[in-house]
Length: 148
Image 1 (cartoon, helix red, strand yellow):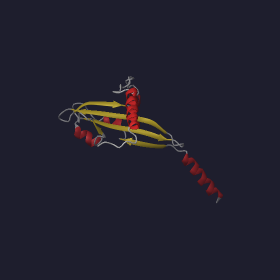
Image 2: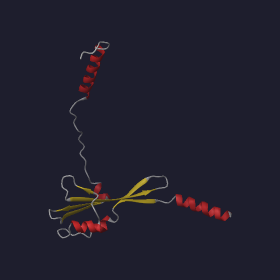
Image 3: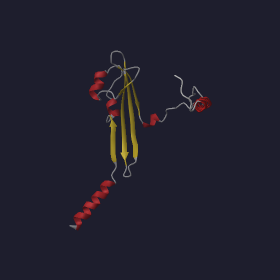
Image 4: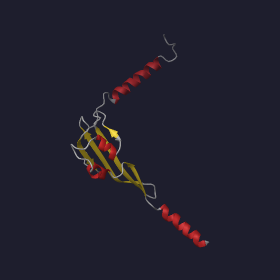
């Protein structure tokens, strides 16, 4: 009896330390993308192999996006991203694959962001000035009946 309790306790402790892998998106995206040939494969081939697109470009509906993201959850609940893959497929007007772009985790680090700050239309001084002038008018008219 004590042996069974010890084995059960050991099993519970070991299973609590296991990593949990989670997949979001399409499994084996790189292998599936290798099946497509530029200027030969069409949108029906893509739909049969991968399925409907997860995202379409807002302006050009002939650009489809597929993602594969793998997380590993540790025993403390931390999530580590182990794999990020994105496939961009661009079709021509007839639905034939015109361009294939496969991005993985190493490619995505090469994106350069603009360091400039966005200029605002107003400044904090004008907001403060408007606020204080409104407050001054309310104090000046406090207790007086409103004119309508």
